[in-house]
Image (cartoon, rainbow, N blue to C red):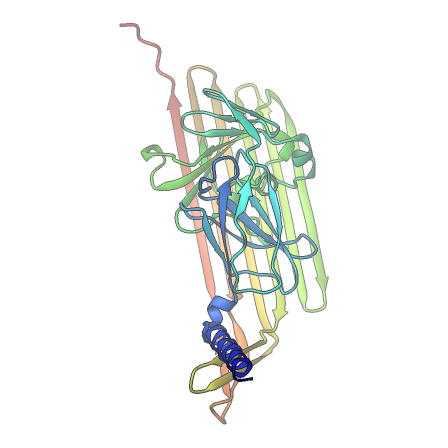
Length: 383
């Protein structure tokens, strides 16, 4: 009888210690998920793999990249069950169900190589050629057919470390570092990328170690597009939605004129996102000596974002001799009400008086620019 009592007492103490340990875990740790990505063939870490977070309807929520040791931490998680899309150039995409309980580490995620390496090229289903200084990526017919524009195409190609803003189409780099965008070698902004018809994109050159030639850029993406000898091309997309407390606009218009060695193009781009949102937050902090409950109740708060861009471009190409490009660009960003804004009331169990919180941000920028580029091909000299 004494032995049974001791066993029950020990089990009760052990259960108590486990509960205390779990309760003492910081709230920030309970709201994240950790994981490690490895090469399935040799179990080496896959650095800078792209991890995209999808909700139950397969809509993009957020993402991150693995570090040089293959580790990653997710803080942007769906409210309900979701999926992870883990990808890297040269590997098959892995789809992983998100655990229903946060604060855990995922099992090791193994990526299967989808290619056979040769000396200078890699032959695989996705048509990737690997050179000494870059990866040459050829989009599939399905990717080109389904893509809306140039930025949407690389989102569908799942390039490592590349994150696309679903509201504006802005192309960014996860983590620290600078990304540089180019079209046929000419540096551009994401708004010019958005005006490229996917059918005109021959390939995408991806530089993950660009070197001093590209300044401080950590990643360079160069769109190689078709160049016609004669013709006019006009394209545009207009999506506008107004209803309730939400306004959405995605309007693009592009014009391209080709005649012999000359090309003249112009494009405009306008995006607006306007809506009211409410922040509600409920958390409990457990300490050894007390428990604190915090409840934040929000009021409708306006978020308003406007982006307008216009571009006029002229280029003159003499094959094997020289290339000249002149580009006049104007971009304006207006954020009279940022997504960080909030109107809430915070109730805390250890104080009787609630705290009223009001945050408001405002941002506005104008960016005119004139870029001139000239490249001359030197004749081969025999020594």
